[in-house]
Length: 264
Image (cartoon, rainbow, N blue to C red; front, side, top):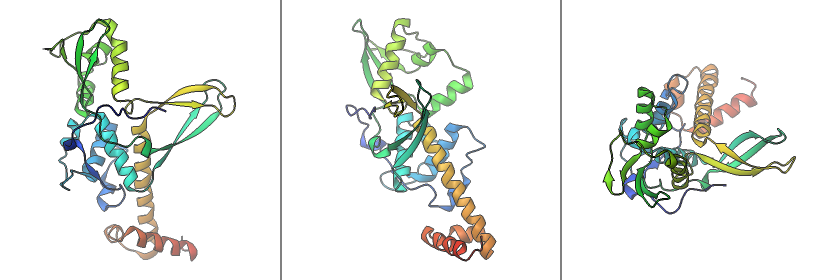
């Protein structure tokens, strides 16, 4: 199993504090189904993340964060809820057997990796690179940038000490090695897990979209909140605001009583 690269860490200013999603009434305002994935992540971060001094972050700030930094914040939110296990369903590439992998998020949690790093090409050329940010994804989508060379070029800051512009075209021979360099520096964003099939003992690498799994979990938490509101409103005729103002343990108590008395 790949783990976050311990060699390069982000400065303390990039660290953040996160609360559990589902612990505030405003969490029902995150529109998972009607926005794109990047926008959903941004809304989650704005709702649940603060800086180390407890100040709320602005809506624009998460767009400037690297994908790794955003992912670490999502992991912190999940851990704040006391749920460190996330499940991944895959099929064996050899025999097709369904496999369920339980991942411990503590394995992946840590400070964001450094947003800038250096890579050396086979010919000794030193290349300064930066990790992609959320606003890069938005810009690439808006501009229709799909070519591998263009994506790589936009993340190159300098070559042999000389700054390069967005129109710089890296040698084709670099492209595969650049992919490896980004994966080595930030293995979490494009996570690969080594696993073995319990049925046929075939070993394989499994791609794990950790961000997608976390988003699915947060959407499930929100759906549970909505179901709780529905049940309590049906039983007691309280408003949504009144229900969500209750501490979570009291909502849980009332729901248990509803089930015990057969009021559901």
